[in-house]
Length: 457
Image (tube, rainbow, N blue to C red; front, side):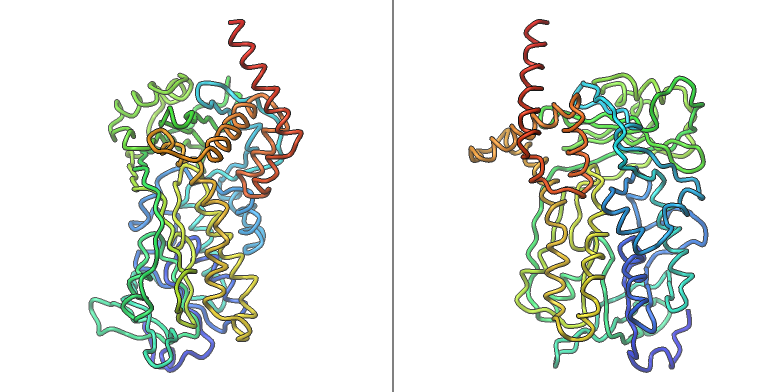
């Protein structure tokens, strides 16, 4: 793109979104209703067809958009799910169509009405990018890294961005609003500290997560009673998981992963051996002998990372951070895209007041950060069980963990508990709903029945 003098003259009514991520594309579409011009800048090549991107290493692995995230995304992009289905995405009921083994025990299946669209991250991002590019007042520009956000020393206000173009002099683009949606590798905390706003507080949960994925030819349906096949560990005693899910093009994506560096190697023999090591043989049997269509890909991350921008004592007007740049969680819980959607929904609800000056930018940033409290706490509560093995924890924490273990176990055989937990996991019901008396009683009765069966055995 040629940055003309007219474009660079002043901020007019322009917004800049740094990062053509899923969070960035949602943000741009929301901004387009309030600005004359929205520019999306990304350092990566942005293909015109659904091809993997160099700067999205997690793109090669299973992605799942939870129900709450699906609803928000559909609100921002009406008709999105139908468009994905037209491109080959496959819808599945998250209880009826998912054959799930939890810690060596198969879960019963019922129709839940809670569906997910299974496709590659590549396809989802491509369809969103195509939607955004078709907007009259949004320009999406690839291969354009941003050096930093420009913050006026006199006013403490963000005034635009400086581009870092290797073959040209740095170029400043003025804007009324700048949003960082560059993901976990965001440099916003560096930019803020260098501009005199102080250090950003971080919260991390170290679990040394890793997984390996491959795309396989999908065999004929005959003899299968599932669309998604899933094996989950009994935490904290077990650490390995794997899933087979359908993707566009009548293919399977197979992902196998684990906490604390127990993931497989990236050769076929090791991958199949890993699947064979799971508590049940079904995933190994499903994949064995099936043709792999692409090289196995590995992804590693140290653990969850949350940046507490809401705790900053000073904040630049005209600047916000969204997406994984705020909160990056263990991908095995499938919460990442929905967490981003929650943040953009918060921004969408406040944007009119923000631009009218009736609310400050730091207040909105704090609300964006607060919007991910629930998914972050859900992920943390699971991973804290690993710490329970080696650290002293309060009796209340142990009691809560024991209750939720009972719920998880009972969800395998009890319809009410299974659907209630599915709603909470999909962020459409509060965790407090799981303490309802009828659920607690059912969990207790199921636990007693399981103990009785073990004793008879």
